Image (cartoon, rainbow, N blue to C red; front, side, top):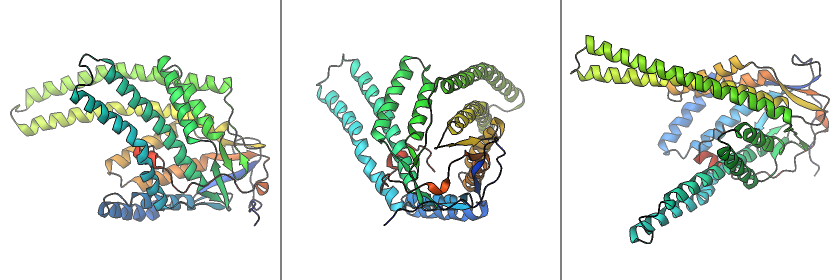
Length: 388
């Protein structure tokens, strides 16, 4: 049986991004009114199954979002199954046993007196081991989750794929984390750049491989934006501390002058206002982080190539920051009920702002030879790594 090849694209149009011809455009046709009932049903079934239905619910959401996202007029397809995600979680439990057994062993040694009370290195070694192991598991989980998700994403019958080893990616992440620690954070932008490159350079669309260079020019862009973020964060921290202290002191003086200090409701109101202000003052930190992420995502996408073509974005930082902040605020305030609104507008935002331009013949792309995982995302679920 021969592997399918992509049929000719439905049409093309001029690119609004650059003089290069547009190979393909993304569109998203999802509606909040369609996804909301799915979300409500998922919440109900998760409640009555004590959370077990989560994996089937996630699969339903993915099938909806993928099916409402099209490229050159043809919708994506998600072929994953809830039972496979559930098996992935069970499979991941074996990775969590070593630190648990290690911790139990330390406790037992202390109890029976096999370890001297004067030993000060043991807690340090234990913390170092746990920290390193968690970093490894997060890298492993993130890579294997994307490998599963890509392998179950199709367009015109052609699968996406992610080659390479989750273990190798996790070990790279551990090594880069060590370099970041000994350089007091200076290596952070390089670490993020190299880890993203490892993902992109192992990604396939059918039998065509993506390429992302890690040249000096790209690294310089990362470094400049990263330290810009650090500088803004430091400046805001200084201003926030001054403003927060003065605001809390002013509120305290007001309540003391005008309210009955023995009234418990007044004390509760004052404490609630202090907590609210503390949360409010942290919002700009999120905005600064998303300012950095906007530039980072643009660099990742704009420098990704695929045989005579490359991806291209045209979104500005402001709209991206607004998208992220309002999505988070809405989901938190509604206790998750605004998830359909956030998911649909995020899919629509990126669909409207990403194109593939160049000279690649889409009809020449053949089927991917990468393996399709039948269980995955377990560790990503454990560490809540944000995989939709």
